[in-house]
Amino acid sequence: MSVDEPPYKLQQISELHKTNKLSLGDADFVPLKTYLRRHALNHHNANFARTYVIVGSNNIVIAYITLVAGQIEAERPDVLGDGEPEFQYTHFPCVKIARLAVHSDLQGFGFGQELVRLAIGLVRANVMETVGCRFLTVDSKQKSVKFYKKVGFTMLDTQENKDREMPIMFIDLKKVSE
Image: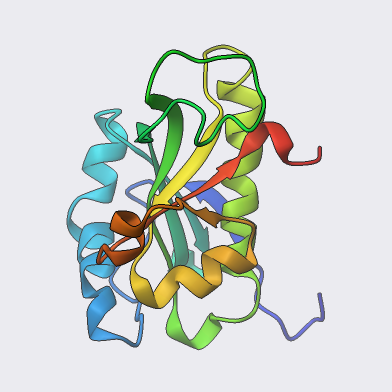
C-alpha cells in the first residue's frame, strides 16, 4: 500500500459507520444501498444477519457483505453431492450471501473478491467446524453472475434456476482449498 492510498479496514457494522455515502452506480442495485442504510445495523444487532463493512477514512463504508443462515434446495439429493455418501434430503445447509456491494468508484479493485474470501473463511472456521454446513450460496442478480463465476461460484444447473431473475449460485466449501 502506498502512502497516497487511504487505509481500509474490515469491521462488523456498528453505529460508528457512515452508510450514506455508498454509491453503486446502477439503479438495479439501489435496494443494496437502501438495506445498508436502513436495516443492516438493526438486523446485525438482532442476530438476523451479520454485516461486515470495509471502511475508508472517517468510517465511510465503501463495501459490505451481509451473511445469513440458509439452505439450498436441489431437485435430487445427488445434484450437489458429486459422489459423496448418500444424503437423504433435497435441502442442503448453507450460509448465504444475502447482500454484497462495492462503491461504484472502487469496483474492479478486488474489494468484492475479498469479501467473498472473508465469507468463505468465516464459514469454514466458525460454522463448518461446529454445525453441518457445506455450501456458500447467493441469489445473484443477473448483472452479477459474471462476478460470482469469477470468484468461484457455480450456477445451480437447472433450467428453472437459469431462467430466474436471481439465479442461485453456490460454492462447495468442502472442495475449496485451504
